[in-house]
Structures are given as structure tokens and as C-alpha cells.
Length: 162
Image (tube, rainbow, N blue to C red; front, side):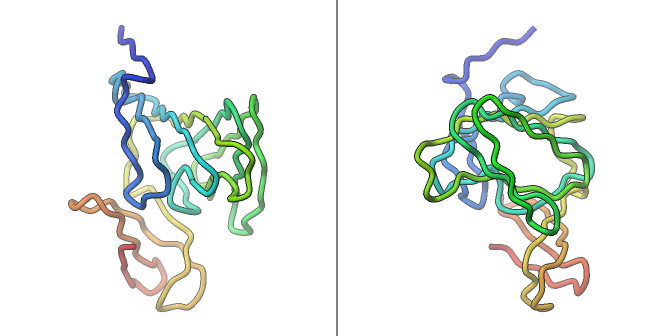
């Protein structure tokens, strides 16, 4: 048995600086089969660095307070998720969540992923503007030894780190 209090879990921010408070609770509890992250997001902050997919993991977000907005799919459909609501993304489904800049309040939310407490980086893709193709393309996503993201266009092979 493992027990943890949110206040005792260290903050680990996204390498792209898109939020100030993310607490990897699954790490504190030592889980192997489920990822759990606690977030406190201010207006303009995001859960992750942009539209992406996890080929190896489904994700569920539960909003405790505030309103989180999610972009879904290649067409960037927007869906608001209010306090007390949940949203699920299947493996391979592009998604990104954030708090709108003009929001009246912060968002407190949980993100759950399964199976696995950690991502297989070979299974994560991001949908971003390719600097070489001059169009939105799927990019392989990796975390470098320096703790930064590197994106590689699956169409032309161009790589960059923001």
C-alpha cells in the first residue's frame, strides 16, 4: 500500500513551460499500470505543449474546478469541460487541453492514463506546423537527454527543438 498527499508531491513542469503546477502523483505512489497527474492551470496555461497523441495510452481528464478547453482531432474541434465533467481520449486520438486566456478562474484537474505509468516516447506524435513543409504535419516526439522536446516531421524528416 502507498499513500500520498497532493501537498507533498513535488511539482514537475512541462519542458516547454506551458504550466506552473503539474504533480506526477503516479510517481509518488509508485504505480506501474496507470499514470496520474494533478494540475493547477491559470488562464493561458496548458496541460501539454500542443496537439498530440499517445499511441500506447488512453487518457481521461477530470476537471475539479474551472473550465478546461480541449482541441480534438486534426480539425481542432474545441470542447469545453466544466467542473465535475470528464473527457476521454482513445489511443491515437489527437488532443490538447488548456485554459482560455480570457477565463475567469483557474482550472484544477486530474489526468489519468493507462496502461502504463510512463509514456513510450516512440508512441507519441505531435501535430504541428513543419518549418520545411510549410504545413501542419505529424511529428515524431522525443524527450532529449537535456530534458527538452525534439520534434521530427514524419514527412520530410526536418527536426527542431522549441
